[in-house]
Image 1 (cartoon, helix red, strand yellow):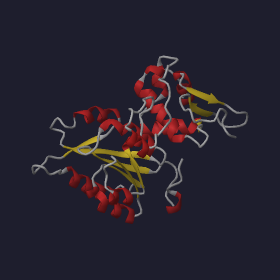
Image 2: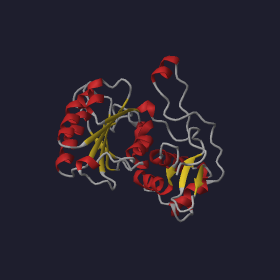
Image 3: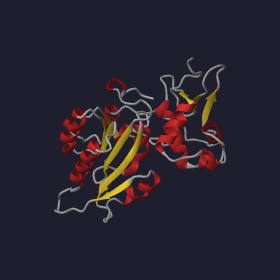
Image 4: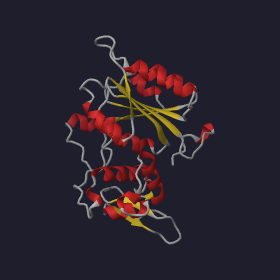
Length: 272
């Protein structure tokens, strides 16, 4: 677990994070890795996506709402060409700040209009994690505690598309290229399960490419309501093992460690 909250005296045990998404402004494609990234720091207990859900522009988002327990917040466009969702998001952020008092906020948007909000949240002692596209203006990027470009996040088990030489020079890959997965068992063919488990291992990974197995299980639980018993096994160690996609090492006298077989940068043997 990251220790970002320790200096402020906030609880290290799964701090609460409010995830607020400007759905009109960003793609739905990266929500799974966003949640896994947040799992390094706490639990996204509040999950809201803002937009005009009566139209067709957010069609791609609708499937993700149920999958990741995200609450849609309806906001009609009162004026042509104006995005009213921004104001609704800001109002909710302020209400959450003074009522639920989360340890941190996560803003998913590429809109620099949120910069004053970020500054106010940080003034109030909250960490602010930002996610957006490369076009996000610098003031918004610099105001956040941490800002990560969406193209730096890769879906578990999916290779990123080939980039132009200019883009490749500007963007470092989030994880090494690897051969397509060859699942060993039936559970390894469950795309949603594989995505959750692989992202959980990556979120918990140490510098040597290995993660403590219990930490990876906790990260998976923070992202989703997943329960190993629904897959015919009794716990997360058994679930990871049943997919056939991970190497698990059980050192004598130490905690079990896990690594994604596709991680080409991992150490052949975990560091003690």
